[in-house]
Amino acid sequence: MHAKILLTALTSSLLSLASGAAINARAALDVFDPHILTPNNSTIWVVGSVETVTWDTSDAPENISNGAMVVLKPAESLTPQYELAKGFDLRAGIVNVTIPDDISPGGYAII
Image (cartoon, rainbow, N blue to C red; front, side, top):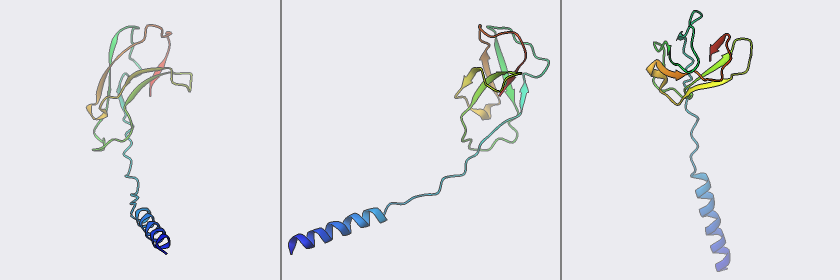
């Protein structure tokens, strides 16, 4: 009899713990994909140099959920090739990057 009462009390406790777990809805994600101002189509970079990438922050959300990254992609490719900067504040609108020494001449895009 005591075992049955103990088992009932234990089961009730476990059920109350399980039903007490709150699950909140995922917060809205504010993904920011800014318009790149510089470099532009007339920009020429030299390997090994430190260059500045700037972007428009006029429509940046207060809280940005995506990570900041500047990636250089060859113009004729769908695959990004060089990660130039990562983990900076997108609301700053500017980041300095070093152009890799092993990059081939040609057209590139910042993504």
